Length: 175
Image (cartoon, rainbow, N blue to C red; front, side, top):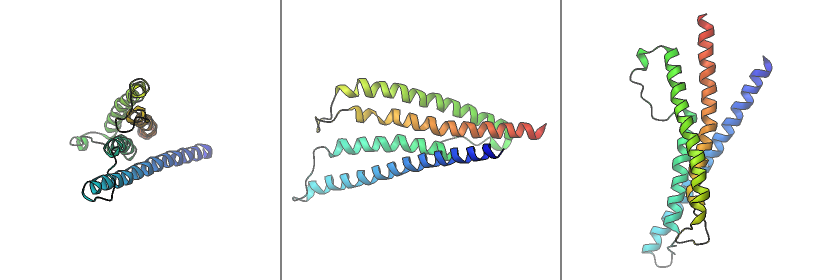
């Protein structure tokens, strides 16, 4: 029994570390977005501040990373959009089953994001370059989708294990 508790604690800390790393990446991307946008806007009105041609494409790319990675973070916190109007009328067991079904659908979507996103990044992304930065592959513009799909799969697997444990503890408590 002690090994199971230690393993659960270790896995929880691994998922917490991954979550904190992705959160840190999102924060750094936001700071970079703000700094680049500030420089670009100031560069239009202040003569001695440069207005780099690449600023718009980089800001949009960083925003796409933030958008999809923050969706993966919401999955871990269970903060994604959900309808709870009928939750008070359903049994706890039914709610857990509905959570499992919802997570399985999102899990399937995350797999599609990972596989199709990777194919797009490798095929379409590798063929083009950014307009303002011809040395940089468009792979980086498509890469947020498979990256977020991978993060979602990690966080959903943790969520599903938790749901199944909760479901089995309810089942065991009633028998």
